[in-house]
Image 1 (cartoon, rainbow, N blue to C red):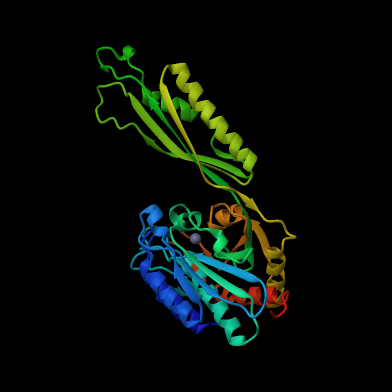
Image 2 (spheres, rainbow, N blue to C red; image 1 turned 60 degrees about the vertical axis):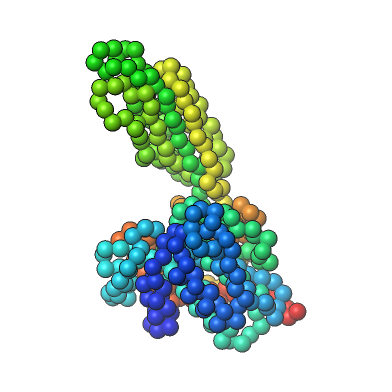
Length: 375
Ligand SMILES: [Zn+2]
């Protein structure tokens, strides 16, 4: 059944322009909404760490019960998310085909606001509620990376930022390394004396063609789509080439082993051809896996039962703020709100799932509250 309030708020926020580093318009609206709900709201300087103009928004409502629970989603969206015109068809929301929809992650934002409104309306005693709307997630989880999690009293939380039908929770996600190499060759006249040169472009191709990549194993991948030589003329042997990409794995050891293999492989190929080599390896985020017996999962299971939903705990393929919070010692899982094909112009949101995700947020709070007694 249509939830008119949620629908109107969704349209309001989808049609408010936002981008990584440019979340101010959405942030101002959300701060106002949280204050109206009785939250104490602050904003940090996270934007400054990645050239953005906006900080993470943090809302707190002290509880009548012991315990604290975190809910989070992100305020930015991938590029092509300006001037969105949502179109509803048969209970599914789309963009008009020229932009993304940005249900990733505005649907998560709205589900959290709805859940909070519901539990406040119920008048029942609540735990401390911590709402966190992050910036720069789509860039490189920038807002989460610079978050000092000691500001949270919660030790667990729900990140409303996962694709799929409502009832799906992401309790595992891969870690990621950014990898790259710079090859230094030797320039020479390509017509007169090519044998005196060291062709960096050819060496880069050899390096890549013999590198293990693509699907490495069921939980690991590697991808190197960025290649460059910087050379603009055809008559000089190429003296510099570089490429970069990434490796992901849900298994930390496999990921670290691949990074070591990558480095060795590049150095070996370069050495054989007498080229210089500089290899870059940088950890972007670590993998996480939350086991079925952790409290954050038990609460999710019970909350779903209350709503007649079948909970599904699955591994995700991408990185999200939860990777960062889990690495920092908080137990957090992703929560699906009904969107799919996110990051594309075909992005869509099943409205029935979206409305249900608001109820789910409320049920998570209620279920968690039942564990605690009044202060
Ligand atoms: Zn997202």
